[in-house]
Image (cartoon, rainbow, N blue to C red):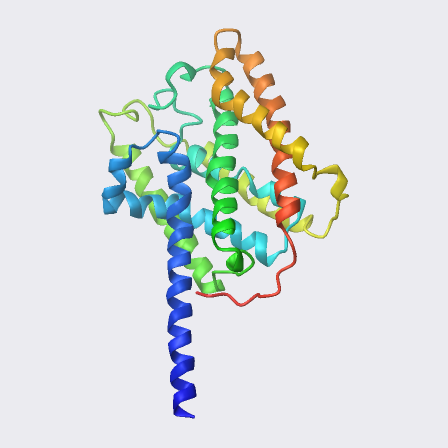
Length: 288
């Protein structure tokens, strides 16, 4: 009996270590795919523990919460409503780049297509980019590397609340940085509270829509065709990553229309991946 108990404890410790490493991967991998691979953050920054911590809080925890909703609610195509959340949070709430023409990454897009205080071409572009590189790609790669974990929830209710508190604290810290920046890209900018609240409201509505439509089923033939979707995905990435800035010298309206059109391609491509990869989960035991 004692030997069996010891074996069980050893196996439990191995499983817990595996789950802990998997959780660390979930919160550290998304910022790599969006920040480092896009060239926005140099690789040397990842040797700074503070950078890793901030990225884990503002990228990793939202990613884990989105993954949690996908698994617990057994989301099918309605997962697409969660797709824009990271982009809205990072760029609309955390960095405020949707509204700040002096943001470093804007370059030619600084102040371009700004209506009602929102830089619409940049906002659409970043929502799409974050949806791909902060949500779909890391989820896809991690599921391939750890297929046995792809249906396993990671958070208990208390852990979910702690994650939300962590996101809130790092966001408030960023607001403090913005309000005290007198020389950098925020020197002529302050946190736009009304627009921030609107972004928060949009995020809540998107979460609600994904939940309300969780049991609505659509025909698989409408969304999944491997050859066609790989082609559409290539066309989409070409248009967004290489051709977006070509529209800038033409007009803001043309840029917005082009981004909306390629967004429709993305919608089709993303739903195809989601429809293929999402299945009912047999294991609903949260780990933390």
